[in-house]
Length: 207
Image 1 (spheres, helix red, strand yellow):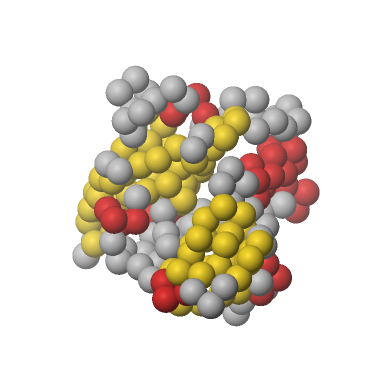
Image 2 (cartoon, rainbow, N blue to C red):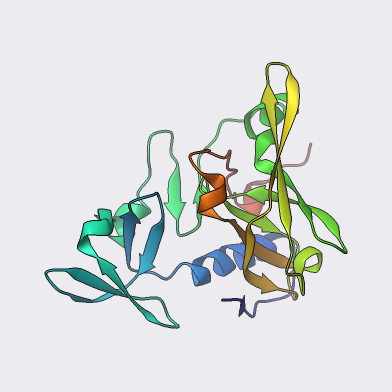
């Protein structure tokens, strides 16, 4: 389902705030259910029975069999900081990171930057979740139905390309030029992608 969301005009701090709002709007607040196979369902649990949980996804109510649930976490538990100061907020993560040189940052997070391709456009994006959520510009993907995401990995001193062809558009907002994509779990398999963290524009320094 493609959602169109409304935000304030793009600005340095407002852009990050709008992006966070976009991601939080897609991920309904409530419990987080980790399912067999690695999928995650988020939303308020409206009803519980001995066999299933009924989760409000906003546009429908999903019945999730208890036998498919590996873990259930509250919204507060899902966002709790982990080792290293990392905290997950819906579909994205934040972290308290030490200052690093550009070269070190590229080595650590370079694989989180991806190539987005459609029949009529080419652009870049970045991974925000290890299970395949990607942020890019709306103008790159808006109106498109066939997208690919190319991930570049370092393997034994060389660059290896992996192209994912099963890509969904989860949300798009042309006002702030943001779009949220998802690599299909069946194509991603057991691969663990490199994610990047969202920061605070007010903490940026010149130089």
